[in-house]
Image (cartoon, rainbow, N blue to C red):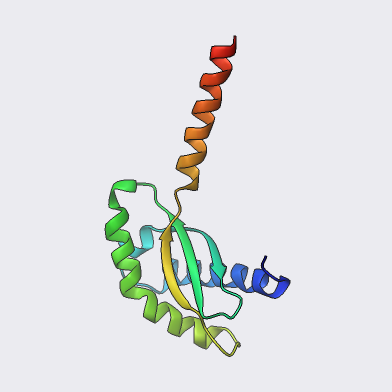
Length: 115
């Protein structure tokens, strides 16, 4: 379970990374990512940055683009935030929305079968 401090840092990382992707990163492919969540480890050694896309077919391209700019994002986070250690960023595709739609379809199917 994340502590209150980690939860605040997660929200701040999410906000700052989203701003950087929108305004400061020149890679157009990386800008396609829609950030959904950040999950930092307790010791701030690593952080998973979850994102989703409008066009899922470009997932691998966007992951490669995000991986290419993660060093500059981490550097900018270091200048922006006043904490001792900036975590290593790892971008992860968030498919929870797709899974939720599949679950809704299954529930609808069961409800129709019960009628």
